[in-house]
Figure 1 (cartoon, rainbow, N blue to C red):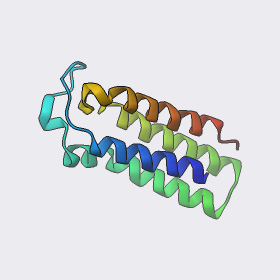
Figure 2: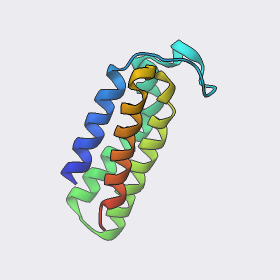
Figure 3: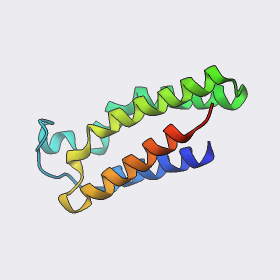
Figure 4: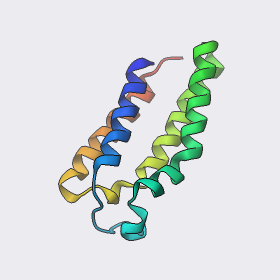
Length: 110
């Protein structure tokens, strides 16, 4: 579980430190590519992930594990929407970090 939390944290850091790239997927340009826009877009998913992680830490039942994994998947889906905000040179790093985080979620055994 610690590896997943670390991966998600590193992924968020990568996302926040990237600049805005072109608008190639219909997401509305530079106004969308701000820390504030990102924070607002993912805030519910982050809160749900934190609650699910806390529940799982307190009671490592299969149900709580599955809820944690689903909350992580939901968070990553929200983050995917910001791919166009990564500069062209950093877009592959963004995809790689996202794939690593998804792999970690999928490898978590319940």
